Image (cartoon, rainbow, N blue to C red; front, side, top):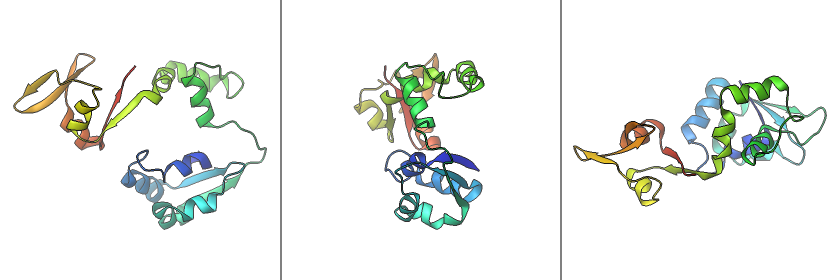
Length: 163
């Protein structure tokens, strides 16, 4: 099961954030435990989204026992702005974030661009084709040449970071 706050549950219904089939798979195959955040109407979030509504039986809603404003979204926001998360989560979690370099990934999250087609990728000027081989546009990334069409086909879009 995926444990999440109602802010993440709400994001499932926002176009462009999640791929619908991935949301459907998470809900259908694994289920959700959603922690109701203060001020969020979880039942309304579910009823306003077709995928969540069709998987309602796999979604468990839990009320926050001690209301607070700490959430993974807030922690990621603090990391992205270079702020300390010392008193927001356990030291072991902070060590894990550092060890797996999650700080770096989230620090530049706001500058990610999703390209759903090869033309989108190059039109946005996030990347320039470094090579055209057999008519396929390729991009060099960390000394690896990627076939952009393969990336988009496999993952639904190519996420690129511009710093």
